[in-house]
Image (cartoon, rainbow, N blue to C red; front, side, top):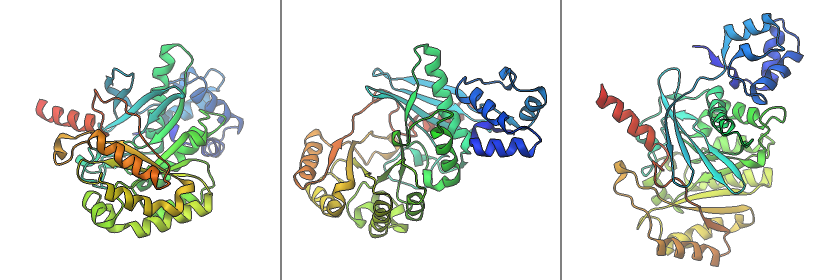
Length: 355
């Protein structure tokens, strides 16, 4: 199968075209057609010569995703289920806020991290997405906005969909460079956030990329015993190693880091855990923010329930009292398959029953 041209950065596209006998300036023209005019057919690139168009058509496609399902929430959140060329399904979410349109993208087909509360890991990792398939999600959502005819654009990106982004590092970085390029989609680095479950070698590598893209870490527990119970990755990268890598990131970048903490009823939402979390982060508090996340229950993980509102407030207040900057995440899409991976899992089950 041909790969999507979206997977090439401008430098990579330039190099490829020159290697194949084309003029260097052609890359900028093609790039403009892809990301400014947002054409979906090479034949529509009217100022590109026939030889170059034929070369592109022989080697690439533009879009490799097909919309399979679209769920629209009462609050305007849209969850897309896309089918890829090989038949695999992935999820992408469009959320609208007062500050703009934010898209949550997927980086892998399935997930091997194995967090015991997460719907993404219900189906094990099949493969990594290539950079073109990740960029393709943004382009599909942008085309949806274009069809509305009000000139609005994707302004923010969160890499928090299905999969562990740092487990697909090379494709992730190419994706980030494509969407951040000022000659293309020009999505500001500070409007992009990458979330990791804690692959410490990659946190260190990311620190050295010299980019302004935000980093979020899925912590979800303040001690090894509890974190290992709900996140098996903690066996490989326990909290001590994780915090060492985070210290390296903070020292290298001097950028704020977000800690994600899903609140699970009577599991990790006690005042004792809040106190431990405050102690763990106290020396990093000037560059830390804790994002407290109400849990979206998953049928297959029935042992977990959303923390009660009183517990969420008490946890939040306990962190604040101890000098930790924190907040409770604004919820969207709760009336659709809100948990990441839910829609994909349900569709795969439905397809199996249909067969």
